[in-house]
Image 1 (spheres, each protein chain N blue to C red):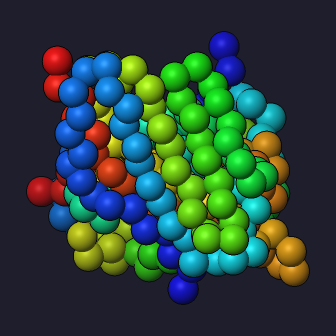
Image 2 (image 1 turned 180 degrees about the horizontal axis):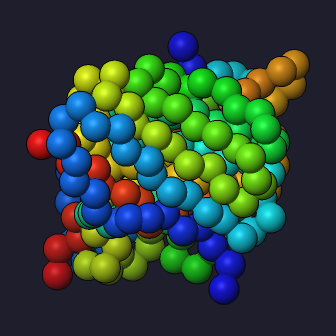
Length: 115
Length: 113
């Protein structure tokens, strides 16, 4: 069973701090990794995608991928109260040799940014 | 204005009735998906389709049915065989099946009484 694991939280950080969200995955052959933000009662919104080892930055968001450790993280710099949401990690499993091609989601980490 | 449209946003049904949730996309995406979200359970895949007239069961397909007669439409029917249908249902689409990101509609919250 291919799995994606996240700490459910809640993770509480003060406004202006760096929030660090972590995710591990079980399928070593996974190639594509995504972070979604989901506000309460709303649908998930894609905020970052990463495909190769290293860091990828987009504004206040940085995604980090380490395939050897099967680990992906999301850093949010200068956290704002509007960043308070649940963050879902999603992994596209091994795409070689007949993968289903659909995303596997973690259960999400709830982030709370305190003013 | 491109996107994925789910309707209705809220749906109430009596126990034992079948109900169909609509999902339409105008993004010209090949793949479409239905997920179910329950509190503390994350997103679970119900059905997915990578091409018109073809679809595959996901992890929790029992009690659900789908069709994919048109590229832009992927309706989900929740049948009376689904034991616990009250949930938040999310439709998504992606440009292709391999390694591409998925985009979600606004969701349908189904309550069965």
